[in-house]
Image (cartoon, rainbow, N blue to C red):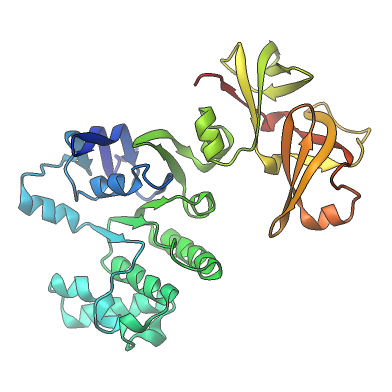
Amino acid sequence: MTRPIVELFDAKVAYDDRCVLDVPHLAIERGEILTLLGENGSGKTTLLRLLGLLIEPECGRVVFDGEDVDFGKQARLLELRRKMAAVMQQPLLCRMSVSRNVGLGLRFRRLPKVEVKKRVNDWLERLSISHLADRRALKLSGGEAQRTSLARAMVLNPEVLMLDEPFASLDAPTRHNLQQEFRDVLAESDVTTVFATHDRGEAITLGNRVAVLMRGSVAQVGSIDSVFSKPTSLETARFVGIETIIPGRVASEANDLVTVDCGEISIQASGDYAVSGDVYAAIRSEEIDVIERLDSSENSGTNVLFGRVSKVLPEESLCRVMVDCGVPVVAAVNRARIRDTTIDVGSSVCVKFPVSATHLIKRGS
């Protein structure tokens, strides 16, 4: 097993005697894309700056590729920083052409002109901005400017790439296209990437793993599936977008099946849960289906609830259907399928979701 490229141990950062970041441990694995997901003020940018060796922690250790970073040794610190590149939310381009902006870091490193030209042209082409090579950078659109900023970072062949909400200021279509394109670029280049965002969709689109930040602390870190489908706390569950969270009490456990008493209803969850007593049953809306009547062939691996539709909220390709089953349940249903039914506000419906999709959270965690 390879060692992490960057690792933090008991690292704390304080501003004006106020602790703004407290990370007992965080490891960035070589070649991965780790998303830092959190609201504004949660500590994402501070954590990026710490991982990028731009600020020194009040206490704790920062380890780069097995080496403890000594922030007092400026020459060595500069060498390590040169192994990284960063892209900010605002491109911060210089008053020169696109091609000269992209090659700026290479010229600072005194690479031969032939090598600079070759690498610049390669990244202009890979990010589809070759036709802008001679244009003044300050005349670019938002998407073009961010492509230029990304090319300027990638041309350095960094070992670690830091992205601080680089798509946040773009319009939705431009943001979507650039996310998809850059995901392919990162996969091809295999560069270790740390990507800060407040957008859950971006985290899912770009990340291999995700670290959820809340009030300067890492609340949970793991694979996209584990964090978004199996959050370890109620607060994290709400933040990652789980809308159906039902309080209850574990009634029985047998054969890897847990039954939760939720008052008027009961819900089953699969798995060997080390939980008892009061819990929350959390189910993502994508896992929940709404039908007009129960299929007699429904298998035993499915939770089935009955209720009445209280709201139908159309979105781009889905409808969020809110159903009162004695407890509120929210389902994300394909809009086209909803059109072929009589499901509407006031309808009596059947709600179903797999037992395996029910995640239990210990209350008070």
